[in-house]
Length: 124
Image (cartoon, rainbow, N blue to C red):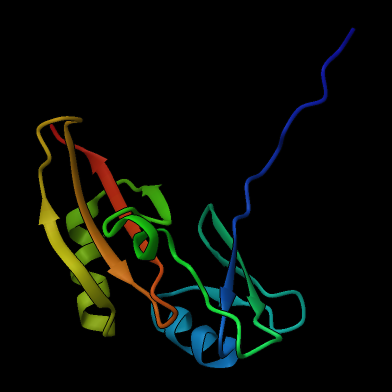
């Protein structure tokens, strides 16, 4: 029996103000579709949903455990992307570092809703 193939992963993030969030991500080079909520840059695909009930909290992973990322994205050159994001005004959560546990060069940004996205490339 043939198994169905999974083709794409598109995480869904919830936003208090989707239009402001789109503007932030556009500065970082994402193409944003205001109808579907899709945000794409290269092979990274994210969906942004508008929070309908303003009384409900948004709970990025780090609000639960104090440190976890919401996305961990593999890139070809973490340092070059970091420089680009700094120039674009990204909110830097931490600058490039080299965790010895898993031999990656990584940095992380925070978005307007508090989500932490790490970007990493293999250390050579």
